[in-house]
Length: 399
Image (cartoon, rainbow, N blue to C red):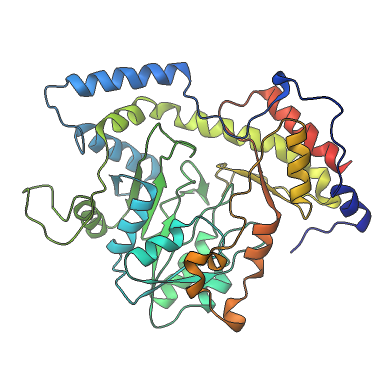
């Protein structure tokens, strides 16, 4: 599916008029704004003091980390959550836990973040790039299944921007073909699909706490989620150099240093009750954009899907063939925007050797997603007036 734009509209979109005067500072809308609110700055100071003066003097994998794991497991309705050092680390641990070994193949989306493929190579396996739906920009289950071979060990659907992958369809073909599902829900904390939490659909899933994520924090960190007790136990060993947490310096397998910080655990616990409100605010901004942009579909702008089911509200990305001109127009009016993945993963130099040839190398959905997407401001520091101004400027481009 593509967005239709008439030649006249396209021509106009390539040459937007610039404002006659510089943008006033009060009208500037930055794309990203990661300053901690004053209440959270105070919370961070309090937690730092508490952990630093705690008689236990345990700074990684302590009781705060364990409590955060328990509470997140309850929220996602899964058996176990294991905290680790980063989203990339979580994906690496998950791949190892489900048994991916050198020589295996792992199906990943052709459109998305670099760790999707880099972690597969990092465990010695081969990334197989499947196409994405050009509208939702998430893994196409039909194309993904067509790339399964007798060497395929796992598939890694990744929720992208505001949209969860089609997890029922992916789970179905994975079960049918006997492969594991590693659900990359790095951006999906708080989202649900059919009543089930993002991160709880795969054999293992993960959330990232990188600062700009929906429940991001002032540091690196992530969690792995699973209903499988054996997988959880293996992730716990792997995150701590293969130790089981009972006896130090006894290594059951070669693992990693991917442990969680107690200060960050205390910080996340201290604001966990606000997590739903944080996600609701992001959803409200996205909902306002959707309402304003609904009439622009016929003029060349494709907005994300509306509704709560399967929506995660991490990045609000519209699509248009006039993407670069729209970005220039927004910048001229003091509004930030961002292109996340300008080149599909298999066309990056780092992964070109795994791109495939002939029909296997064609991924038109990923090419369209890379060429058309543009992310608009979506963060917790946006004011209502900034959201309205952003929508006004986008709409003016297509008038």
